[in-house]
Amino acid sequence: YESIQVGELAKAMGVKASDIIKKFMELGTMVTINQSIDPETAAIVAAEFGYEVEQAAIEEEQLLEYTPPSPEELKPRPPVVTVMGHVDHGKTTLLDAIRETDVVSKEAGGITQHIGAYKVKLKDGQEITFIDTPGHEAFTHMRARGAQVTDIVVLVVAADDGVMDQTKEAIDHARAAGVPIVVAINKIDKPEANPERVKSELAELGLVPEDWGGDTLYAEISAKKKIGIDDLLELILLQAEMLELKAAPDRPARGRIVESRLDKGRGPVATVIIQEGTLKEGDPFVAGITYGRVRAMLDERGRRLKKAGPATPVEILGFHEVPQAGDDFIVMPDEQKARKVAEYRARKQREAEAAKETKISLDKLFEKL
Ligand code: GDP
Ligand code: MG
Image 1 (cartoon, rainbow, N blue to C red):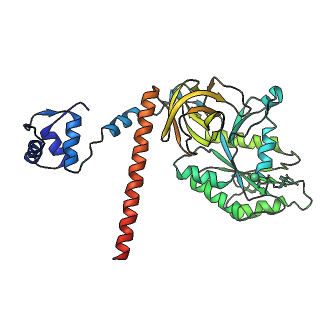
Image 2: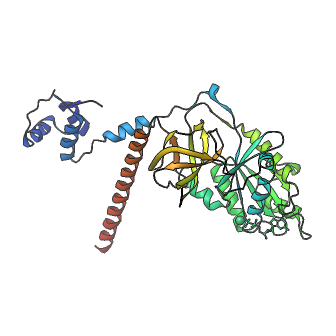
């Protein structure tokens, strides 16, 4: 805001106007109740009363103001899938097998890089995005940070082993997040495989197969022998269709960091899943407490992209610092504003941490008393 009257400032702080006027006098200025004062002066006086006038907060909020897209802006988008399940039940093998079904990679070749997520294009042109960091830890970490990127969980259960602890945990996590589960009964190539037993164990946990009158989709696969992979992908698309996933492609991009690291040669790099809008090379952005400009955008095969739409995972170069998994990623009007928001957030975070420390030491003090 521009300026504030002495009387208004008093009201806002809940102190008497005469006290404020007195304070001004102590500071060597004579003011009247109707006089307008500039924000900096107001901040100084307010601080004397123990207030902090959060000029930056107001600007930051304005800079990040978000208008949800109108229904007309929304277009169908591919689903984003996370693979979960008990250790050794075949998550990594499955993610590798799915990656190989990608028609684009078959045409173009290229060396696959691990960037934390990838998108496959199926024969009929439909697409699915997979988060390539399996396990419920990444999932809960993201969710704890308010970052829900997953639309569907593929629950991998080995047909020779059945429901185990982490299977149950995965179900709990998916349910808590309100994300539907598609079951992949894996390792059906093994002689001791018993898919029916797995189904009944899961049915007891509420995942009743369709052919038993429930609504959970099941695929029987062998990730290792590449049996049933196409069926599983079909089921994922079927589940996605029921969710009617949409996003607005024609606006500045917003997304989430799914993975990040400091690359020796290239500096900070991070994989972002675009959740809305279209990201272009050169776009300025804020991500958590850091910011930057998209210097280059690469897909999981290291190919340069000029733009990326909803549900696309991209590796981005151009961060000032390494962001954290779960951080938001928001395109800003210019780099200066991006920096302002990032610095404000960093300051807030430091303040919150300092406040926490004070509280802890106070708690300790009281313990001793
Ligand atoms: P993760 O811990 O869930 O990621 O499991 P992995 O993908 O690492 O697989 C664990 C082990 O199971 C590996 O030795 C795989 O080769 C094996 N495996 C995975 N899928 C299959 C399958 O469909 N059939 C058989 N026979 N073995 C599999
Ligand atoms: Mg694994």
